[in-house]
Image (cartoon, rainbow, N blue to C red):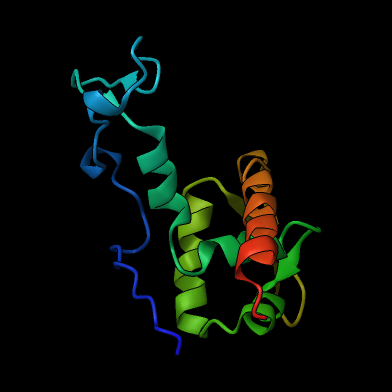
Length: 141
């Protein structure tokens, strides 16, 4: 029997880095290289920040679908099964975070395409690793 996994919601998908958990010094390398000093004197944890950005239920699927080039809204909706309202929210958030760009073409009907930025393309190896893990360990028998 499978169980549904419920992820916490975020307001508009925008990450407030000041609210991210900081690194626990006890979990850092002995030389302290596991975290970076933040402006407020605490330790910034890249794992927490990346998980906050990428841990959304749809983010990784959208980035996966843009890996081979620009896609239109309807194509992303069809490939992921996301409702139009949620898809709009996620795309706005990812554009605001600098993960993808939104290009609007002056055509009738209007055409909008989404493309990964360099920041978004840097996420692709993570998706490849998740794919390999899923195939190796989570494939149904």
